[in-house]
Length: 203
Image 1 (spheres, rainbow, N blue to C red):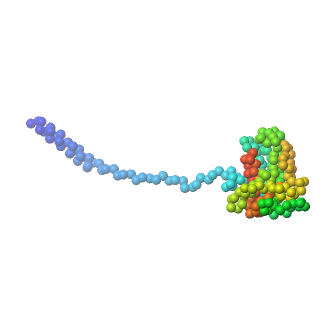
Image 2: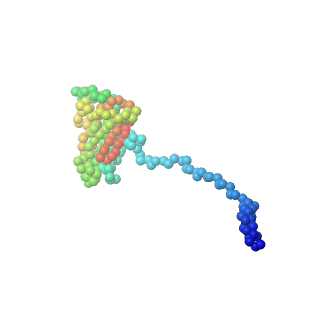
Image 3: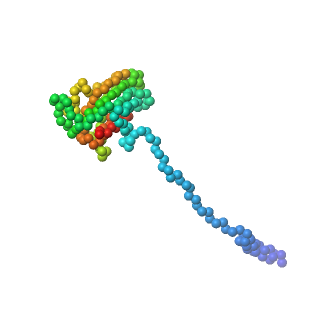
């Protein structure tokens, strides 16, 4: 008679364990998901002093220090001392503007030592002319023509023009005449060797 009692006990054991489990422990409730708090403050981009076109915005009379492309050593200083829109040529044989309007830009520049120029790949000097400028209208359209035209070269006395090239430890002042399509935009001075572009409002 022992065998049947063992079988019955074995059969009842799972039922007993189930009953104990139901009475002693409740099923855990699911945990609510928590969304991490995000920083809603936008990260500000570092200000490198340029506008949306990548140009430095400058005003008349503001001095710009130009350094070498891969060096912090100053190569030259540049200052636009005046901008005269709708400039009227003074030479007796001057021709009308080919693009529409003349703009006179007065400049001053001073170069650094020969060593500084040589270290920054300016061994042939600093070249500044009307060809160093481009024109962008108020809609953001860059003029594809030349601002240095035959008419612009014959507009002003040669003695008043800014020299095309400055060697080391030199300074000069003079003007360049730009032949632009209209007067409702900006002019941009570019030095591609230094990867520098400086923007000036015409009016």
